[in-house]
Length: 402
Image (cartoon, rainbow, N blue to C red; front, side, top):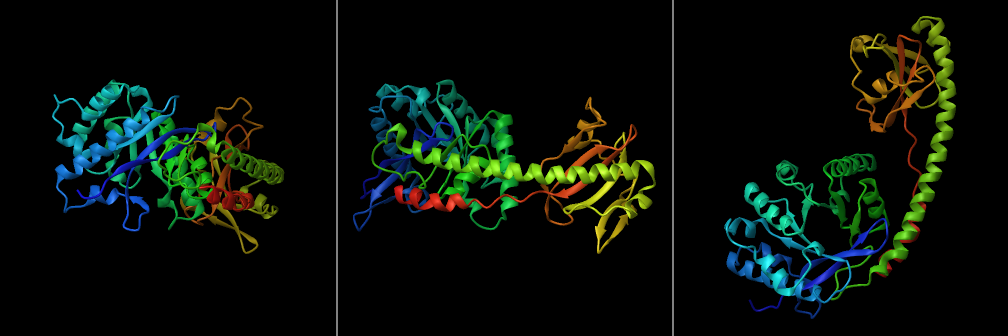
């Protein structure tokens, strides 16, 4: 190789504290113009032999560990490890990375190895990952989501960290779709006991996307680009606090608005319940003009069987769809939680927001008791999120500081 490849370090920020909790080592080289540029293409270059790519990878890894060995404190270092190199290790062979760590006298608990989702033989990766973890090193699952067909990796070894690149959400998906996917990933991480690291955080909006999936850490140029040395732990604290304060103000305002809208809606639903209790559905609905936002309503028995049509208000009149009678909804949380509630007759339960398949609108389902034997379920439009005007105000400062 004619060029010299060396590590630079991008901070990884803990959301809760706002502090720089660790660093990812990234390969860099000096470009033709004298500027520092990524050397990542070396590891994807088919013109280079596997031996040459491995030598470069290990050289950068050793340089990174050597520099990190001079950093006191509790911050961690995250290193990328290709499944290609793991596949080439013999079961009885000691991992070179462990030898480097021992040689430099590093605390293994301050190190994380990032294993990419792509390629590599799963059982071999599992064996080697378990050996690293047994030595006290953390394991991260890198590039999660770019190859969902390889979820078997999550079953093979539960990573300590799951890294999600938010740049995949910059195009193609609407806000509701992004929110749904990010919340799903966050819930999965919580159930697996894995912390989420969102990388590719380039703007304030990206930071708020990271909060949607309950990210423990964020990483990206909105806070700091990769650089030659290690920044102090408090370098990003003020900016993170500003963003969290903005998020709190926005979500509190949204919550107040949602509660106000739901209070009005609940009053309308209680009036509807009184009508339905005293008469047949078709007759009762003839005397009821729905509150704005109600998409449809229907009635189930206590076993969850739908006993009425779906009623929807269209063009000033109620329309009935009887094709759904007999469907069973007992498995939906907003149904069985109401049935099991000690205050069944007084409770109104609200589902988590979802996208309605029929209308494509963001909505929730409300459930309340009609009487001891019947449950009323109502699909209503969910309040839209308030515009995050303070996000754009913060972005120039974030981008300028990076």
